Image (cartoon, rainbow, N blue to C red; front, side, top):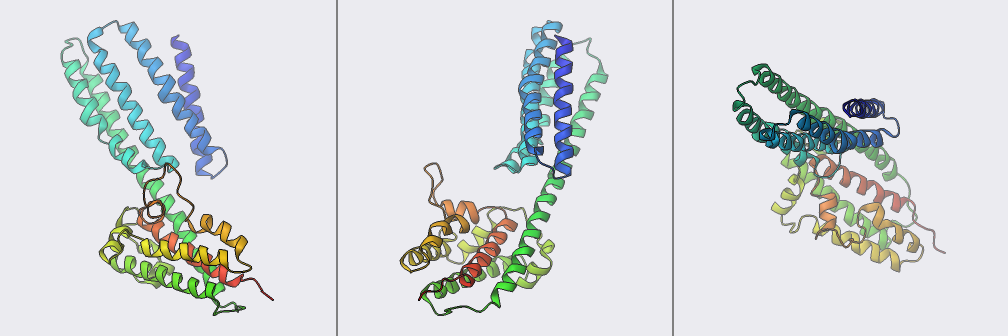
Length: 316
C-alpha cells in the first residue's frame, strides 16, 4: 500500500511538472495536465497518504491534526490551481489559501504536538520552514501569473489600436446612414467611458495606447464600475448597454444588416442572459472585471464597431 501511494505521488508530480513546462512554453494540453495532476494530488494522493500514515501511527489523539492537514492541502493547492488557470474567483481563492496554513493549520499543529512529550522539535521547525516556502511560492505565483495575464492583455489592446487606426481612414459607402450614426454615438460613449476611467487613474488616452504598463492598478476589480457610477451611470454601463441594444434592433430593421445583427451580440458581449447569470450580466462580464480588462473591452468594442461601419452592405 505504501509503495502504491509513493508511485501515485510521483505520477501526480510528473503530470503537474509536465503541465507547468508546457504552460511556460504555451504549448497545448498544458491546462489539462496541470488540472489533472492537481486533482490526483489533492483528491487521491493526499487522502491516501494521510489515512495510511494515520493507521500506521495508531494514535487517535492526532485525528484532528490529520483532518486539518488535508483541509489545508486542499485549500492551498486548489487556490493555486485556480490562479494558474485564470478561473473565476481565483484572486479570492488565493487570498484565502495564503493565510490559511497559519490561521488554521499551525495552531492545531502546535496544540496537538505540544501534548506529545516524545515529539521531536525539529519536526516543528521543518513544518514552519514548509509554511514559509509556501508563502514565498504563492506570492511569486500570484505575481508571475498576474504579470503574464496583464502583459497579454496589453498586447491585445495594442492590436486593437492598430486595427482601429486603419479602419478610421477607410472610405464609407454611406457615412450618414442610421446604423452608422448609431455606431458613432456608441463610439462616443466608449471614448467617454475610457476617458473617465483613465482620468481617475491619472492617465491620458495616448498614454494608454502607447504605454499601458503605466496603469498601476491593472488587476483591481470594480474600479471601472465605481468611476462610471460616480458619474451618474447607475447601474454602471447602462448607457452603453442600452445603446448597443438599440443598435442591434436598428440593424435587424435595416436591409443588408439582418445577418450581422444576429451575430453582433456575441461579438460585443451582449449575448442574451442565461438562466443562471446574475442580474446586470452585461456589467458583470465587461465592466466589473479587473481594470485592465474593462479598458480592453472598450478598445475591442470600438474596433469592432469601426469594422461594422467599414463593411456596410451596398444596397441598390
